[in-house]
Image (cartoon, rainbow, N blue to C red; front, top):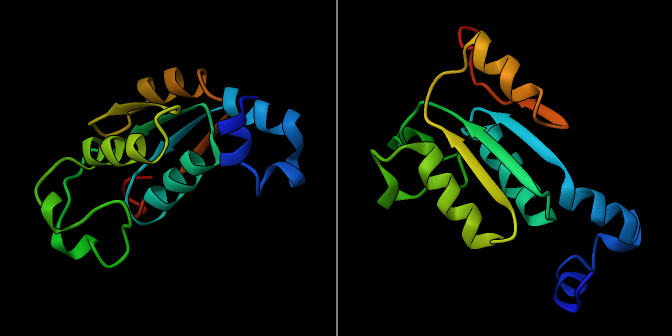
Amino acid sequence: MSKPETERYARQIPIIGVKGQRRLSTASVLIVGVGGLGSAVALYLTAMGVGKLILIDDGSVELSNLNRQILYSLQDLGLKKVEVARSRLRELNPHVTIETYDQRLDEVLAIELVKRVDVAVDALDNWESR
């Protein structure tokens, strides 16, 4: 690990070790839904240095989202959530690869994406979507 990486992840390396940090840097996570739960999960995984995130959501930022969806602000109203999320997450950690899908998850895409990741997170906000 480089000196900047060691410094960046200094608070978690004592817990997970250098080997654990290297594993995180090669891990990939699918996050389905980047609303209240998904935006927080994406933020923390990016901060931790997970190597790749795949985000899927077909929604746009609405005023009613701003009380709980921490990646978005007033200037983002009307913009696609996955696009804003990708931008904010890249600002936080440019070493994390962010892949986005601005669409609803269907069975075919779910099967394709799950095969490409180590972990999938269901962060959908309603039963109908699930």
